[in-house]
Amino acid sequence: QTYAQTPSAYITVDAATDSFGGTIVDNGGFFQVAWNITDGGSPVSCSAIPGQDGVGVTSTLVGTINAVDDLFTCEDGISLTGGIPAGNYEVSVAVVNTQNESLGTAPTISGTIGELNQITDLGTITIPLN
Image 1 (tube, rainbow, N blue to C red):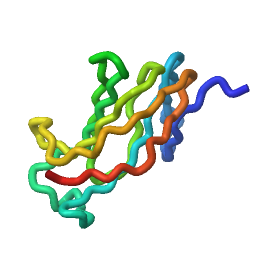
Image 2: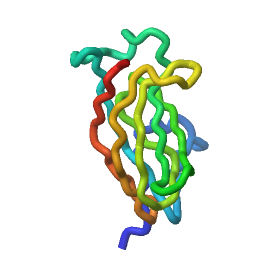
Image 3: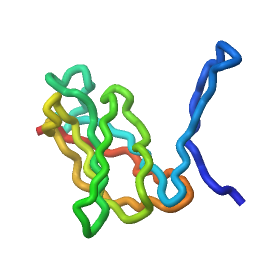
Image 4: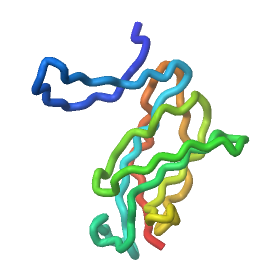
């Protein structure tokens, strides 16, 4: 039986001392989220958004104010959150500026983080600019 699932990574090992480490969350896991950005319904590239500082993902445990914030490079288009405790979450995904203010926010989605380091794929989310 598999105990835990960790994100994969491509690495180049140049020396005997190079290594790769993964995080194992005993009572939680990760959200995987991908994004597309639109302006007036048309796709737009991250480099065309003045003042953007990345894509922010806020995962709020349902029924609480407990939230976990992650900030990703906009151009990546996909990423994994840091480790999040198991539970049901409302997830907000937004393009943000350097003051962490939203330049466009996708509709909130629901997701569940399981136990034993599982990755929950939230799919591709479309973020409309304001």
